[in-house]
Length: 426
Image 1 (cartoon, rainbow, N blue to C red):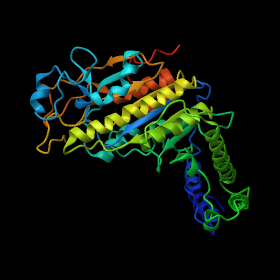
Image 2: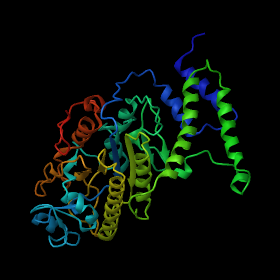
Image 3: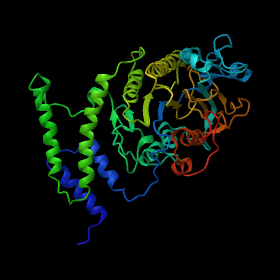
Image 4: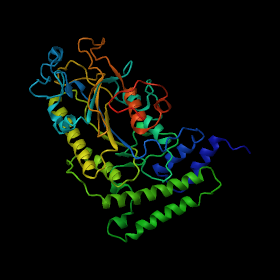
């Protein structure tokens, strides 16, 4: 009898899930195994010890009120209530300034460790949140991509030390950017939640050993899966890795002492989780955290200011924490948002979906300054939106080649001009 791949996947899922619901980590592993025949490049030793932290500013951040063209009359004309005056901004040069809510990032700018990349976007922009997010995360300009650019990078890693946290997303769901065909990425909402939950009796003060017994029972269940069956080795490794990863993270957290005071926000708490993993040297190469709420269609001024302050203070605390632990030299932070906002403010004192916007890159290795060209407010598209001047894939190419040590063309599927905010490799 010929065993087809479809039958292997079908029968494998039935066998493993018999009598129980398969946890997400295992189902992802099986899906990954279905594509394991894909032979990818590896870049294990490249840029060893370096980490990229990606911050998603979800909702579409208003770039014009983040990096403010205060000297441009067209900006003030288009935004009679939202425009920031030159006296209010934190000046970067004689034409651009940061929103005052970003004050916590000013020391990094002054130390030339903060880069602003202007006019970032792509051809024929999509103004749908979900499609635009997919484009940024999968590089498929149709918005139908399935594998993330960071997932492709992670899939190419070969870690001889067996680190369970080469990549880590903080949140409740795996970001599309980290989805991979043959790699599994842990998702943690908090270190305490990254474990097999005890049953109700244990939660109410029962024998704590019951939780350990439950773990062992689960592992035994997976061990009953025939070793000669499809994906048996992968399932066993995934099960053991998930349990060991939970123990490793718990141990790291217990030993970690923050070197800075983090704000009491979910975003800052997420960054602190990443700091814990970095400081305790768990092998993190890519970390991912999201701050949402940037879809500011109405009464934008107050909401946007609060969000930018949360972003800046969280990132500043993260950087200070790493610096206190002498761990900042090997970490670079990059922000992104699915699109900017329209140049002209709307009748609700907000801004609608737009196109190009700036992003930040920061860290000790970063060559601070302004990169790219600010979009021309007098040369808008037919919808009144900005024309992009920097392809977002060129930013990714720079980070991959010059920081993570992976060939950008292999990950991105094409060649893109690199930026100078990181020194050239070699």
